[in-house]
Amino acid sequence: MLVFTGIVEEVGRVVEKSDLPDAVRLRINGPLVTGDASPGDSIAVNGVCLTVVEVFPGGEFTTDVMAETLNRSTLRHVGERPAVNLERAVTVERRLGGHIVQGHVDGTGRVISRTPSENWEVVRIAFSPDLARYVVEKGSIAVDGVSLTVSGLGNDAGQTWFEVSLIPTTLAETTLSRVPAGGEVNLEVDVIAKYVEKLLSR
Image (cartoon, rainbow, N blue to C red; front, top):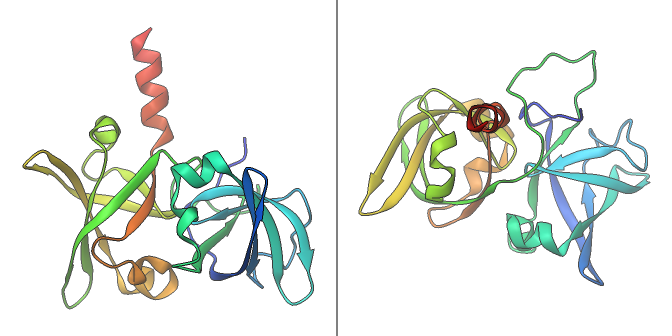
């Protein structure tokens, strides 16, 4: 099974976006993740598992994003926010530093607030009530492909939200420091919760 860890390897940049029939082709600069990449390999872009089409000298690669993926993820906004989190698929030699992430976005959330403190920043994200049953305090969630721990949950005036606490390393080495209040993020809930739900439903 192809998986990621939610540990971002580098912040890349979308340098070109070309329209295709029912899709777009992105050209992304990511020198680290392209170091050993070949056509057909998988790279997570803001938490979305995409297939490498072509690799170019200088650390760039192209990938095609279907209309369905554009509709369900924030990749439709890459022109506005060209910086993207990049991670290669896990190999058997690598440690699983985050949690099991498939690169299958379950939905998007919206940043409600950002509360900085001396050692971290608390980010509150509104999300669909349909996903709430999979999100638990101290559990894992992927936000724009970053493996994070849920530090709080709530519902205010019918708006379901969760909080994550971002340490300086996460702020410095991912795009999450750049998402403003009102900004949209990709969400992937813990796949184990979905498997447990299906097994119990039987």
